[in-house]
Image (cartoon, rainbow, N blue to C red; front, side, top):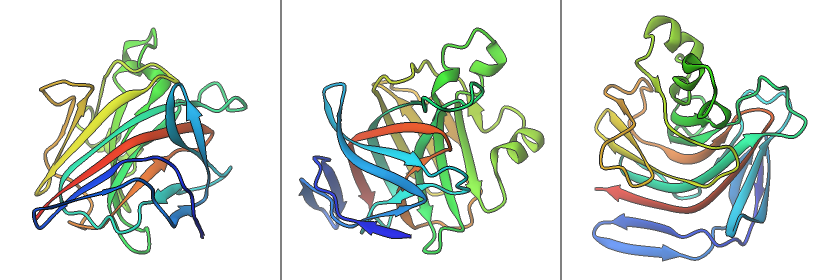
Length: 218
């Protein structure tokens, strides 16, 4: 575990007791099993995140982001790394309700290379929800087929706007400016109902994040 101080131009907005707080920089990001750097990617100031090879959990925790219910909005672009196996899908997303020791979390992520695959089954696995410690995606796919994953049109290395709305035990993912959710998780499986927010990246993936906005419901 290491703490890195980066100056980069994310916009973070939190609604706390009715007061709106805007920050132009984030200090002391907490990086676990990741390499992070400030970059310019396709016209946007962004944070680039790569998982360290062999990592079982690769996240970048956002400081002071304790979150229960509310909205997480961000832009993301991702792809398999240049040296990744061809079967790698480019896994990247957002974790929330993350426990202090990182043993529990809820997460919604995209498999960027599945979005325009020629195989329909592969397309159906583009969006994924999972929860630690007990509900990795293979377990969910076996026990609850089709319930926690779905299709969305996404292109590798292209920016996409994402919005996660969390209310009680329900999470909904909205893509671009859609009025209807792409994915509905009607009963989240992480026992934690609050916790930190973190950028989540799978192995052999290049992920970019920008314009993160957090609105907490209190």
